[in-house]
Length: 356
Picture 1: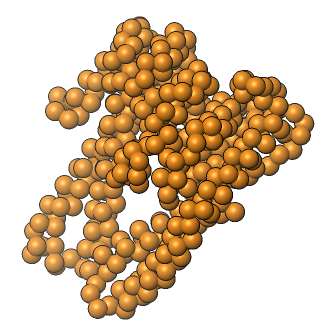
Picture 2: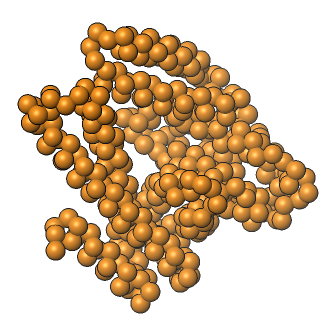
């Protein structure tokens, strides 16, 4: 099904990236290079097979129709009212429902959004509204979706419905997606509190990799927040949420923690990159080192570059959220609970960059 295809494509992309990196670091005319080239050829064949199948627009439209019908059925099973939200307490039947029933809808839309987003652009607004009804209802209901990663996945795929330009595969500048978030009543009322609550909830999940996983989902939450807050109705919703002092203070504190972590990690990696580049600059000493040591250092340099880039992009995203929020609602950031913390964070960052 769609869930399997999404996972296979993700794994295939990772393997292609890894083989490309190994190919760049392998010696010319070596047995290892020949083996890597063979593996890369097989992976590319698999990827091209997927691309051929997923270029069938009729298939993708049928997949989206299936996702729509399943989404409407799940809302009916959850006994959603005409207003969709709030959902009533889960029934016994809902509690017996496996998670993959929800994942099937999410992965179907994700598959189309990642391969041919132009198909989503041309969908009729009532269809897009059905998708957003589904995302909003279940991402907002902890009682129905207890798995925080599944709630995160709902928001992740919702962010893929943000209209973008041609460079990102959107052939019509977003099409009907440009009106979706502006016209959807449930999103206008409930998206901002859902995003803020999720940002807090994903901090602690009980999973062994929760520290790093939270950044993955917060990235999509940030994309949604930055996009919708260009519309006055969502700015007003942020103002209302900021009056809930305890929840909003937790949200801002977590943003500050994330910003500090990303900047710290980026600067550490930049220091590591500089040290490695200085070692490599002295060609005489560099070539005296064993080939294995040079290869390991080149791999560390490539890895550090990727991590530094990720940290810089992520810190920019968090700081952009703070800039946007303080541009619209400054007073909550001047509360005693936050003012000193925000000032301390800014001073810390300035000291890291410019020195004491």
